[in-house]
Each structure stands twice: as structure tokens, then as C-alpha cells.
Image 1: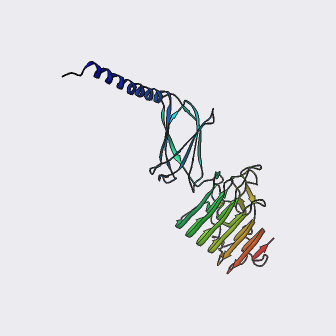
Image 2 (image 1 turned 135 degrees about the horizontal axis):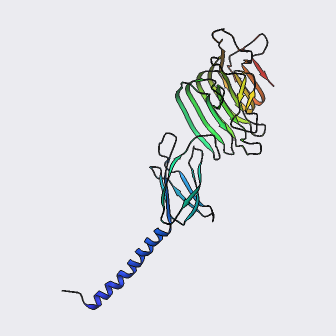
Image 3 (image 1 turned 90 degrees about the vertical axis):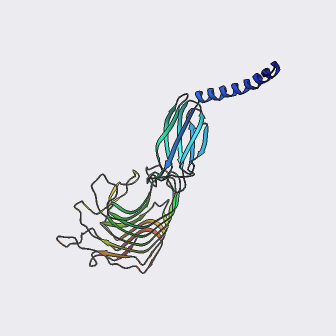
Length: 325
């Protein structure tokens, strides 16, 4: 039995809006674009909850999204144009890519969104723990190098053994045992703050100093070194007696400087507790280089506290163990 004329008309009138809506959605999908990606860290682990901003370069319009538990995000209904994508997450340096061109109907996945604890610190990095590590070789041992306007704080290194040595010129670092430095990347650039750093139960052998240095305007502060035992020696062929300030153009990039056990400059509220420096003679001549100097040298440092510090100068007949300028 077939429905009557009125029933058919009613069905047709009901179907027309659905068809129009479906056509409108399909047309909108063809006229706009979709941008997606997966956010990971440097070990390729997914970064859940990462914040994503998609910015239209022409209009400035911003769409916000958030990565799911698998690090995935997708932003739909983007009008054709050129976009900038910014990704950030707690404990990581921000990530940014510009010049992403989207055409009508594009569905584009951004490859390789890797967040890192890196040299470009435009947002804050904090509350990080490094522990139970054995560093077989490095050009800088335990390192935080702040060069941008973000701040780095509440970072803890504990139960770590390391070796740090000189490498060839292209590599940043000149064998520093520890390098906690904060100065601007360029002369007029802004610099954040490096503070509340703890190093505990650290043992290492290195060709260069434990180094802490900020700037007069932004001193490194509130650093605790507890039970850091350092042996200093030379065993590579590369020239010594320098500090490596890179990456920066605000200071001399590679600075001629003696090699104390601990070098602290432009800092405040620094505590060394049960720390020790040992000087090892270099084979085959069993000599200690002339530029090896004090056990500790401090300059423009306020509230420096030494408790149970052990070590003498590399050449005790000519230099004091501890020198504070």
C-alpha cells in the first residue's frame, strides 16, 4: 500500500532541509581547510595537553586547541591563507612554525612538532628533575644556558656521574663540568631569570670549571650545590684556559680565562655544601697546566655560603684556594 499524496509531500518537505544542510556542510568543508599535528618531546613521547595556537597571518584571527592524550590536535574550518602555529607545554620551550599555506579543501598534518628543553627559552621552564644519570662524555657536563626572556627555575640534578671534555671548535662548550649561565642572546635582547637550582650528589671529571654566571642586571640566584665532587685534569689536545659563552653576541663568545675549580660571577645566594675540588696531573708529563688556578673564584657575588668546602689552589705556592673579588 503506497502512502497518499499528502504523506509524500510531507516527506519531501522534511528531506529538503536535511539535503540543504548536508550540502552546506560539504560546501563549507571544501571552502575551508584543516590543520593537524602530533606533539612529542625529544624522545618521541607524546605531550598530552600541549596548548596550540593557529594564527591567520593576514587577519590576526587566532584559533586555540589542545593536544589530546596521544598528543594529537586538529583545527578545522580554517579559511584559506597563510598561518603561524605556536605550541607550548609546561616544562618545555615553545615551538613555532610560520608560513603554513592552506588552500581550499586542504587537510594538512604538520610533521615533527618536537618540544624540547633547548636554547630558545621564550617561555618559562620549571619543575624538572634529572636523576640517576651516567654521562659518558660531553662538551658541557650539567648545563642550563638561558639566553632569552623566559625564566628557568626549580630544576634539580641529583645522583649523577659525568665526564666533560674539550671538543673541536664547532661544538658549544669547552669541557665545563657544570655550566649555569644566563645572559642575553644579543646586546639589546631581554633576558629572563635563572634561579632555584639544586645539584646534589654529583661526581665528575672534567677539563674545565664548575661555572655559575649571570649578568649584573639578572644575576643567577638561589643555587645549592650539595656534595659535588670534581676532579680537574687535561687529557685532550685542544687549547685550554677559556670559557665558552655561546650562544650569544652580547659577550665575547669564547673568553680567555683561567680555570678555577668553581667560578661564580654575577650571582647571589649561592650555597656550596660539602663540595670538593681535586687537581689531577696530566699524562704523559704529569703536569698541572699553568692556567689551572683557584679552588674557588667569585666575582660580584652576594651571599656566598661555603660549608665543608674542600680543595686547594692548583698551584698553592702562588695562589690562594679561595678568592673573592
